[in-house]
Image 1: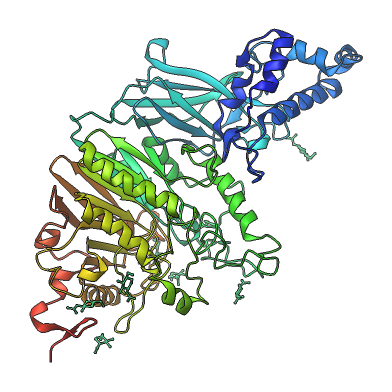
Image 2 (image 1 turned 30 degrees about the vertical axis):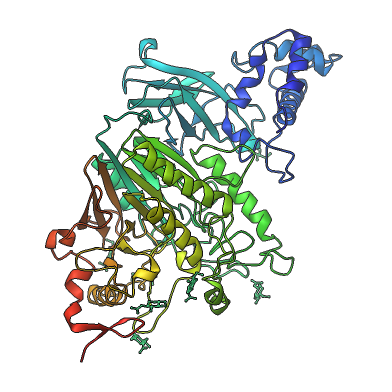
Amino acid sequence: MKNIVAPFAALVTALSVSVSALAPLERNLAYRSPSLSLSNGDGLGHDIEHIGAQIRKRAYDDYVTSKVEGKARRNNAKGKTEADFLVEKYDGDYGSDGRDAYKGKVSFPYGVAAGDPYPDSAILWTHPVPEDANTTLPVCLRYQTSRSESDWSKANLVDDSYAWTTSEVDYSFKVETSGLQPKTQYYYRFFSCHDNSVVSPVGSFKSIPDYNDDEVDSLKLAVFSCSNLPFGYFNAYRAAAARKNADYFVHVGDYIYEARGDGQKVAGENTYGDGRALNRVPEPDHEIDKDLQALHGSVAFFGIWDDHEVADNSYNHGTADGNNTDTGAVRGVRFTERKLAAVKAYYEWMPIRQVDTTDSLRIWRSFRYGKLADLFLLDTRNFDRDLTDVYWNTDAVAAISNDTDRSLMGGKQEQWLYSGLVNSESRGATWKIVAQQIIVNWQNYGTPSFMYNYDAWQGYRANRRRFFDTIVNNNVDNTVILAGDSHANWVYDTVPEDRLNTTAYDPTTGEGSIAVEFAGTAVSSPSSYGANLTQEKYLKRAQDLVTVNRNLQWAEGGTRGYFEIEFSKDECNAQFYGYINNTNPNAPEQLIAQFNVKKGANQLTRPINYGITPSSGALQSQAVDYSKQKWNGTAFVAQN
Ligand SMILES: *[C@@H]1O[C@H](CO)[C@@H](O)[C@H](O)[C@H]1NC(C)=O
Ligand SMILES: *[C@@H]1O[C@H](CO)[C@@H](O)[C@H](O)[C@H]1NC(C)=O
Ligand SMILES: *[C@@H]1O[C@H](CO)[C@@H](O)[C@H](O)[C@H]1NC(C)=O
Ligand SMILES: *[C@@H]1O[C@H](CO)[C@@H](O)[C@H](O)[C@H]1NC(C)=O
Ligand SMILES: *[C@@H]1O[C@H](CO)[C@@H](O)[C@H](O)[C@H]1NC(C)=O
Ligand SMILES: *[C@@H]1O[C@H](CO)[C@@H](O)[C@H](O)[C@H]1NC(C)=O
Ligand SMILES: *[C@@H]1O[C@H](CO)[C@@H](O)[C@H](O)[C@H]1NC(C)=O
């Protein structure tokens, strides 16, 4: 890791001012993303020393050429060296007193967000826009964290500090607020250090409990995936924010899509949907959706990326859009360059921590929520996934899908997850929440003939076996898997592959299940069953799916939406919410199904959905009569 303080320390000693001179830049984590380590050759880590020099140079140039302050000032600057100038302008806690920082107004059109809370700190994010779009000066922002939503007096403030942002990080502003108490509700806001006439919206979040706190009764998450702007409204975000039920929200990926959304076909570019009719065409500089802003402002966020933050069906060295070769480059951009640019943008715009500052690709991380739960956030997508199905190679990937040397996560992450699960059990945490992108369980989606999604865990069966073996061999109880990616709802008893063809797993009682999986539908991306089908067709398809996937206890593909899940000391409860028509910004929300899991059971509680016919989709228990089915050696088939 490069020592970023030393060069400034030298300057600082010469000028005999405090070392905190560097702090306004360093405190903005956007400068430290995606990696602090500049020597690894990825070229993406920001060189703070260099940026500091650029900022001073710009300020000096601005000073010398200033038309605003006239000739006198220019004359005054004449004959002064840059070093003289620095003494005059950048002595002291530079930027804090406003000298040669931007003094105009800023606005906050992108809202505010908090993320990755710890018991004593959290990440706060905003993105100020200076009114003078051409300013070259650093923007200094104050950030304050208060115990009160309305009273920002000193007595309530637990943090009151400032940092800089500049064009080098596209004015992203990302800081760690600290000095927090565990399990506490906080409020935060931002304003310009030099013009507090515009204050950002006030955001709120909760710090998490101390890891050894055994008095934690509940953890409520709202879980989202696949938010494709041109395809429809983000009703799910608005509803979750308005319900004010969740403590946190989790996005398991495809938070943003890379493709055009204006219906235009341009050579070499993907297009997903046509947002023109709904006025939802994504653009650079477009404000992020208001419903998303409302949710971000109300609770802290735990986010992980899937493929579309980079490109369709991405893996470690490529994507369905192109190969990592000059000939496979998309519009001259090789996959590796594209991926690194996407990673940089993600770190600058998302309120996530960088848990390993030497690894720009590592977003997999975990949180200990008292003794109630451990939350594992995986990266099955971009960190170190071996070759995936990129459409033209499906047969080849199917043929190697059982190879033991294939990994979805990379060895380093696999080891971390498995030891994390075992440690979680031994430290006495009740729930092991494994939030990740893609469907883990056996997923035959081709009826009547077999068809598997080799871009999901099905393409990495040995990795799945190692995950399941960890659970089984170490008696890891109460694992709850969260997934997205598929644009449909799938709720499973989790069953190792080799138990599916035998009586080892009983779909009626759930016996043989080792965990549960809740895979949610998309916020707005179209159904993987097919877009715009009739409700009858969606139901028929769901019925077919539960018939050929014995541990799939509920299938649903007719609604867009999200789910909420509450973990308490004795049980876990999940509610799935859906919208039939997401092209309506006020679409009514339906509670479509609910599930319960008892502590220690490692399976869904029977009767599934409390024995009620769900308002959309099909239950295994209602669609399949096993007395009329027989096992033919490969699948259950109707007895004639
Ligand atoms: C910024 O600079 C551009 C190009 O020089 C100019 O057209 C524009 O008017 C400037 N904007 C402001 C707000 O000064
Ligand atoms: C990537 O390479 C494969 C194998 O050579 C080829 O079939 C495929 O068309 C290439 N894809 C792109 C987008 O270049
Ligand atoms: C998959 O691999 C496992 C472990 O090597 C082996 O036991 C199993 O028979 C293989 N299954 C198939 C269908 O090849
Ligand atoms: C289950 O599948 C395995 C592997 O294909 C096979 O060896 C075993 O005989 C099957 N069991 C039953 C009961 O069909
Ligand atoms: C679904 O139907 C709507 C309204 O008719 C249409 O605008 C949209 O393009 C359709 N979506 C897809 C993916 O076909
Ligand atoms: C969905 O809602 C939009 C906007 O209210 C409406 O124009 C459209 O007809 C609706 N589509 C269906 C299938 O109900
Ligand atoms: C069992 O049934 C499935 C689904 O109908 C079929 O694809 C498969 O070929 C059958 N297997 C045998 C051995 O008949």
